[in-house]
Structures are given as C-alpha cells and as structure tokens.
Length: 114
Image 1 (tube, one colour):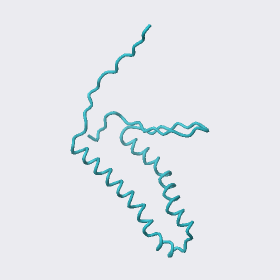
Image 2 (cartoon, one colour):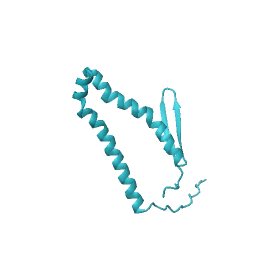
Image 3 (cartoon, helix red, strand yellow):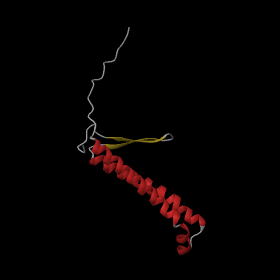
Image 4 (tube, helix red, strand yellow):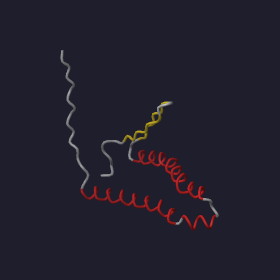
C-alpha cells in the first residue's frame, strides 16, 4: 500500500521592488553600523570614563560587557514583539523546564510595506 501526500498548491511569490530591497538593505546596514559604533564608543572612551568615575577594572568590565548583554536581553524581546505586532504578526514563546526556551517570530506572508 502506498500513501502519497497531496501536492502543495503553487503560490506565485511576488518579490518586493528593487528600490524597496535596496532601501531595506541600506537600512539594515545603517542599523548594524550604529550598533557596532555604539559598542566601540564605550571601549574607546574606557580609560577617560574609568578615570572620571574612579572605577576599578572589574567595574569597567561590567559596564562594557554585562551592561550591553542585559540591555539587549531585556529590550530585545519587547522591541521584537512591537515590530511583529505592527506587521500583523506575533512572537511565540515555548519554554520547557530543563530544556530551554524557543522564540518564534510569525509574520504574515504578505505585508502592507511593499
């Protein structure tokens, strides 16, 4: 006995225009550059900050490492949730004790952006 799965219907995919793709790529590149520069500014100014605030090395390490990690962790999910909601989607969370958590960003196939 053979069981065959029904073939999925072929849905033509309409790609965004070249202008929109270039705009999106430029915007993502700009965000990446700002993110990179943001982290580098603190490292470049580390010694003057250390002198002015009379910080020990470990305190400066907390400021440059742990502070960024906590900030990105705490703000990352709320920002993603707001963006997903604005695009008509949602963020799903699946947590299993002892196994960890899984986040899924679900967006509609078509967006009103293009």
